Length: 223
Image (tube, rainbow, N blue to C red; front, side, top):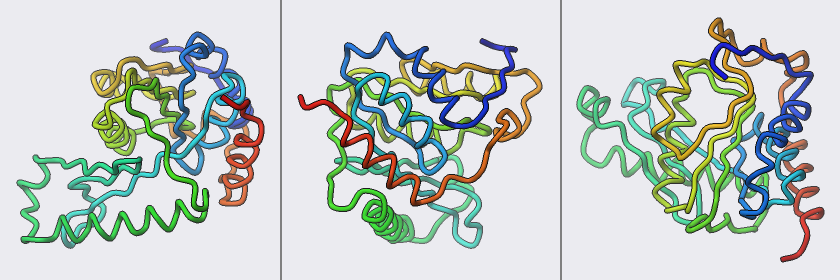
């Protein structure tokens, strides 16, 4: 996969092609967790092909005091929300007492707001003991995905898979030990921005996220 370069028509095309590479997990009855918003159309096609449950994986960064772009940690949604901290950055930023706890509460509130927007009152899935496939439309630096994988791992899935259409080889190497397996269709050595590997990379709207989640719930066979 390293060095291979592909171009996708749009996110739905990427999802269909990714689904073919994930077909072997269908018997596991996996839960597909999409990183919104762009990961949702990709994950929708995966969930449809695998007749699997589709849900969201909401992640919110905790920025350093006075430098919000510098992540000292992240809050990862789930049945048991997880706080993922970057000890190296914390040691440099030296946040005051109570700062992390206050930011955690603030980001959990934002996660809840977004959950209500996208999913209503439906509770997040219980991933303990299940095969979980985390899906995004592509990875650049991997910072958000890294936090997401650590958060999901702490909820003790049976198997944790990261599936993306495109990512740079170096980032894939950094993420390899954060999950059990990575499925990536294209890992060009000359990686550009994620969107440059798509013909159509228009922003995914909130309305599209809500619509696709509803369609996935309606289409999923009863267990």
